[in-house]
Image (cartoon, rainbow over all chains, first blue to last red; front, side, top):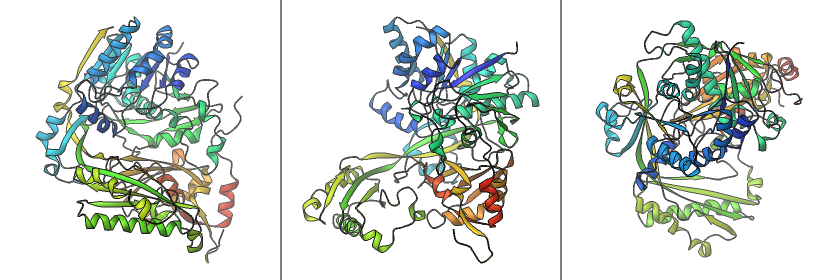
Length: 463
Length: 132
């Protein structure tokens, strides 16, 4: 019988739901779960945790998630791969091992380290990959930098018998490619160069990972459309996507029986192009994927076959994303009811601007938008005609201060309360008077593999 | 629907296509998908980088890149300089541009009425039936 492997989507971001993952394990026959906890910005959030407590800096939902899933996984020998380690994979693995020890559960937990690249970035001082801004503009404010690793260290962990693999930053789709490389013994090109056939298999595996890495977005969630989204059944009980992958890389995307959502040509291709930039050259650490040759066959009943992805050799560089402190924001949202709600909101903005000027509050920007009117589409949102505007039931205005000065941000909310009695009438409330938060800028760059890969370590420990 | 002097119909992309957007640093990245091959022929002809750039210009005047993918009846678009420098410093409520695909679907194109009717009448490629 031809061998095939079934991989299922875990979380699509830090904070996602894991009930659908349980459905994939219990009813979907998933043999591997790969879980992506790190969006581009998540490391920025984790950095704040790490500053407070050096034991943190990882995606903490991995512990309750594994406590909820492990009994079902252990019974079926399902293996689990995740990047929840964030900035502290060893800390995440310690927390998981401690939680398992408290339950008396035995598991082999692997931790992958070595994606940290702040030192290398500072030494290399690369210009911003997109804006070409000079590194010295942010050098002193850079707080983290991590390279996107590929599938290799995860494959090593699986070869060493790990039940659970916890990494820091890896390319999201590599979490899914790794078990396929491990099971099918695909050639990543480390010892012998990958052939065209090897590259096409890797490309299929990467495309599978890309379809699964955003959980419900691959099975009918967040399906952007006019009306059509209403035909997607039972999003409240959505099944996350799974893929049954053959040794040659061809795959059928599916979901667990009895779950909501929809897998068809439309929902699958929305995810296929999600955040890929150039679809002819989707770069990853393991293979460069060309999506222009992918073929999707809708088999009906929530099954789509994917074949035909083309792979090109990986480059000698890895992507690194650094994060730097970029000032602070503080925001207040203020609402007014009919009559003249819009005019009163405009008057309120003028009062705030006067306050900022009178008190000489240092700031770079006061950003103003009107939730319910233009916060989603800015100047592209059709503005109500004069009469309709005057008759609106209520208008909310959101004002956001951008400043390098934390005290200015902390003081922003104090400009408002007095206006509750001394400003325009029929205010229906302020939101967010005390909510300074630090802004982070992102610094993407490319770095030679040789600066990062020698430091990558895989450690497997029995709980 | 109004008729232009060239006897083409003005139609919003929302009637012919579906779309998703996401962020990559300071770029917003869109997939635009025709429901069928007839619709794809219209999108591939009418939705150019220049026109999408002009559509967003009153709000976000960044450069636009465009690729066509006939294999999946799709157009890929990237809008530069769209997120105030990136999601973690963007002051907008929609700091990641998740709703910006809907702003793309607001774009209007001109289509001859017969061709538009054929696009709207052609069946969808994807399976939208009942679960058995």
